[in-house]
Image (tube, rainbow, N blue to C red; front, side):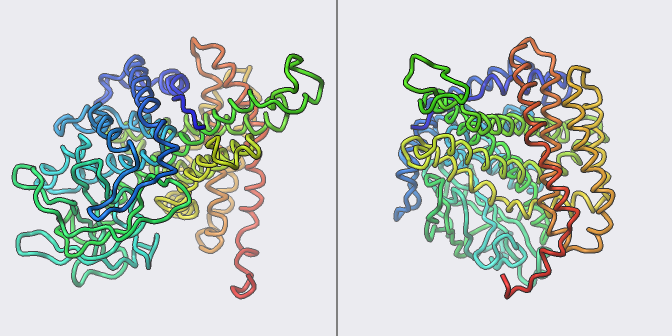
Length: 587
């Protein structure tokens, strides 16, 4: 049976002690931020999620969402839970006050995303697109669209959905066929079919606002001919009231490996009324705002699920009695020792702990920089933070979803045979988290973005600046942490050297670049987590025992996980020759 306890103490430790977010309280949107506000937000939302969402998780997985004649019916209890979520004001947390929001910095949204995913990932998928949709409309839409859509999206009264993917193209959005034909009144008729549309229809919000990619007549081929449109399920009236239903329908729900309570729709737009967002043929640039928001959210969600899986595995390992310890009886009053005394079980638990807690710190380190990139009054500071966020977004998405899945798999393994059956819930975590390695672009796509657009494009200037930041923090570690400093510095040197030696080759040989891209991204991911473990180990906190625990886990990470960089480096240096040399027919 799934059990969820929000990781409130560790969240507060990361944000208040490690990152000290209150230090930015003089900056715009951070004015209200102090340790008490951060703690109260974490406690209040954690209580909501544990009370309202976690109890729906297992039943939602068993029952799922259903397609009815009038549209999608959400899983039992989901609509009431969503209304409670909206009534609590949570969707408006980071929206601008002019649209009814609280104006909080973006990093607090990451708190919501992690806790939502840990308590009920299927539910989390419903509001997950809203912050990005709000951001893209606020950035790119006309005043009329902003006036109509931003306030109800910010409040959560209107849900949002990303309508991008089509069957013939998948992630190759250049192949999309959805058409947009202009009407005389300035609107457009949108015609086409989209797939993989998460929460593309449901009964929880009164309206659903689709962001749809489509082509105008005589648009250029490829991604340069794609425009972005707002297409609501119900057309708004003059006063913001809902009017007639748009020409939109759900053809079917995808039958999936997991996330059964999250309806993934095949959606049909049959001459639906839509409105252009931004400039014609510039839809991809606008859509990347929401896609990057979702990619960062994916990292937070992966940590949320992996954390829940870890703590369930930990509880089981403390309770499950089996063979005696290898060094003799540890619990003589029991017929056997709990499996937590077994070295291999401890290895699995420590690996999960190192990945989850290190990944959590990375998510918030990046999220704080996202907040600063949006609000810092110094333009140069904003640019630097934006460059760092842009660089690390594919790392957060790919590395943390890959390692989150690995962690959830280890959690299931801790349960043994009891993990493979449904009774304990471990298998649901594994099924649900698996999607995160695919959605918003697979890990391989993120790796190509990281190495191509983020590293080669500026000759690794931004990457080297980030690595210099890591080096400065590690160099400042106190003498009692010299072993951690040495391990992370060695990993830094490996990444720095391999980047310097291979960069020119990658530019000349795109197939080699593609063959090693994910290994290279994972190398940087391991360094990024090493950076976080170094910072946590050196944190000056009144919670002395927690810091000692972090130091022990940091040493485990440096000894057992960080050395993976050496294997990855060997593969990166090997290049793509052996990968690409095999003729297609010989596979």
